[in-house]
Amino acid sequence: MPDSGLLSAGGEAGPHGAESREARPDIRNDDMREVARAAARCFGTDDGRRLLAHLRATTVERACGPQVSDAALRDLEGQRRLVHRLTALIDRGRRGD
Image (cartoon, rainbow, N blue to C red; front, side, top):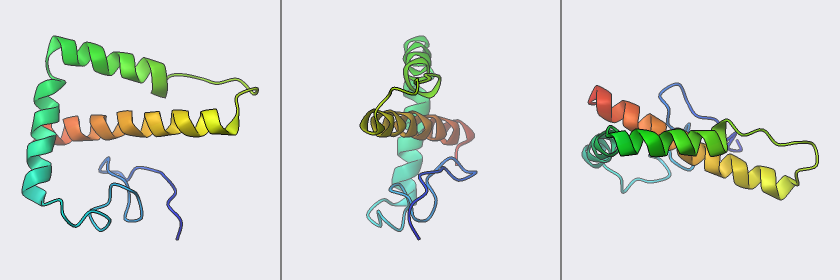
């Protein structure tokens, strides 16, 4: 089954996504908890919130016209996925999962 590129309800890529634990067996749950907590701390500051707002504005909230190339759309989708991944890590770190 090909990777749809969609995030699961938990904010992480699904079982076939690049961020799935099956694809990265070297990442332990304890390590991921620490990464998530670090993301929450980094983006919990005024500067971090400002940076995340900028990243959202320039990727997630950006609309492209019909003239944009396939390559540019794919590049933008990769940037959006990274912002969504950061947001999921921040949320996870705040919850303490």
